[in-house]
Image (cartoon, rainbow, N blue to C red; front, side):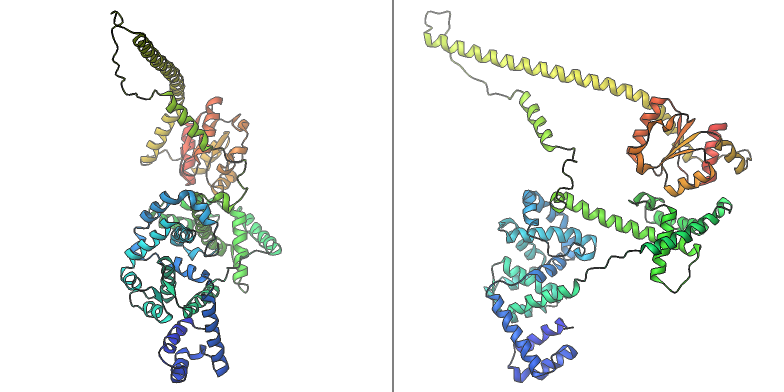
Length: 569
């Protein structure tokens, strides 16, 4: 593979003397990547001549754009990029779909492999597209950024009306910026923005940047698990988990829960809640499918090794971590697409007929509200002759009639405005009364929440010694509904309390409201509960008059003791 860094040095040699004088030095600099025969040398010179011909038409800027976008945002610009992005979006938001339609300078799967690239790369790509589509604002923005954050290089480049390969080479090798690909792409792009022409031999830079981009752009191969391997691994993990059921509860999946405790402490150390992984997973695999997937991946990665259930439990947490990272990456990219107003362009037809929000409705309501309010008017000064005197002419009578009509119209407008205000206040009063009724219904919920928070903030009091099995047996006879909680936690409870009912937060819109019928008490698991699920269920519970409470501990003994005290106390 050709070493382009050495090619840049070789071009420097070729520009400082005849080929016969510099051939030995050139070959030495190119090392094993250099042509080894006169024919190969001549082929490269012919290629450079072709590059010059291309410059007479229009160079392919794909590679140049790629490296420009990857490196232009330097360390000084990063801290202020939010101001740059805000200014651009404020000025050009309506044109963004037009700029995006010109294409992206990187493949979708690449985007520079990090969150910074997703943000800076996309915004800067839109600015570059805007400049090329004729936006003077975008062109001036790029020139201003270059002048501000690459001041020394800008001062060098602005002196030129036309640059040669040697001029570009001299600036590329500037010690201030060490990335030669980025330096080259930045100088070529800014020559375009500053309308500085280039000699034909600069075409070699465009070609080399394109070749280097193609060398780097190796699309990652997606990994899939064959159905046969998946079935085989599921059979193994099913057998393992069946064997676990014979163990005492605190011995089941022991390695998994040991690692869970360690991860919880790591998360807390980084100022995140202990159950952050559970909250963050957008696709809940469940313990069975998760372990079978992990075992399949382990067999594919290490085909000559044998794995125990303890191994799989350990690696399951690594799998969860990667799953969360992947979900955040996907969500961040989708958020950027949405905020830039490109969702419909990126996913045409996907949301047709599904979007409830209509911005024009808000605008129409705003216009109606504005129209209902009488606009302030400047006072009209009139000079009328007294009607009572004989001096009043027909013109005076007509002027006074006109003034009286104007005043009458103003009074009618004011009266209409007051009537509308009265109707609005009447409706607001009705809503307020409904709110008061709602607050009354919330009282019971708030009392329960206050007791829950108080209980969680207090140390556990000394309680009579009642063994765990006795308490579990007692509360297991009650009809209890658990709302929320991670699927793994719910599965543990189902094994111990088969008579209880459970609602998964991911399936709230398929829940039959009859699920609360016959239930003695409902418990909400507050540490893993979506707001929409809570609101839906609390309304059902109120209508049915079912008692409810809150739990927040995945610790089995503490949760059992709390429910035991509620139900048996």
